[in-house]
Amino acid sequence: MLKFLYRIYQLFIAAPILLVLTLFTAICTIIGCTLFNAEWWSYYPGRVWSWLFVRILLLPVHIEGSELMDKQQSYVIIPNHQGAFDIFLIYGFLHRHFKWMMKEELRQIPLVGKACESAGFIFVDQHGGPKKMKAMHDRARAILQGGVSLVIFPEGARTWDGRMRRFKRGAFQLADELQLPLLPVTINGSFEVLPRSRGFNFVNWHPLSLTIHPAIPPQGQGTEAERDVMQKAYDIIESALHVVPSPPKEGTYNPED
Image (tube, rainbow, N blue to C red; front, side, top):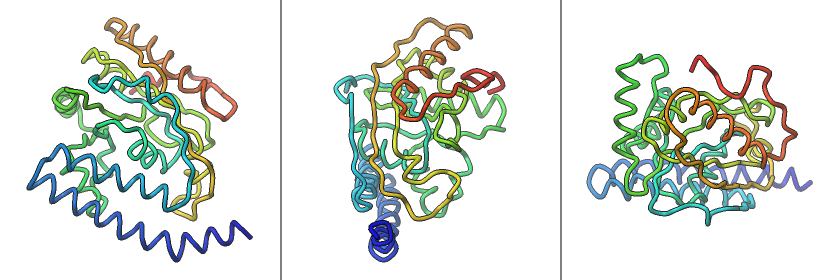
């Protein structure tokens, strides 16, 4: 009965409010970044939108480890990718000024893609070749200053079963090149709220949590150091995951990425 009432609430109350809120946030971001202080407008409207998105859907949130973040330090933030609600959880509750690194295809989402572009988020063309990768790294280098961080999902895509996928090298290559600390973050609950296999559907009521771990400082440069850090980050994030660990047979990183 409660599940039925929750779905009725989503359909007739939450969904219309969230649709209007999303359109309003996108328009505010585009106009604000174009005419006013781009740094402020690129972050705070999205943060408020994400916070309200979770609260309007009545989802409880628990945050652990916020005190471990240095407000003056820029990080390459690496969360696991459980589901669509990872975005709302990180944006609305991490309380860090950051930019997203996101797939090029997301630029095509009407209005939202334009808002992300206006906000200065980094779009990654996975088939763009060395020149585009260099331009992406140069853009990241310019962003990662003065406490502004960058969020990258090292798995590259959402999990199908709640367990962590193999990590791709991009985030670790970037942190290695710029000699910046990595900030591991474990997300729990997002998979239960809306698993990837269900697409866009009714959400399930389930608690959400963010566990922020101590940062991993730069540990030398080169492929070996990069792989060691990748393994360490994988183990740290997985250690707080509520799903029973099941390490991929081919290792925790993708040597082709």
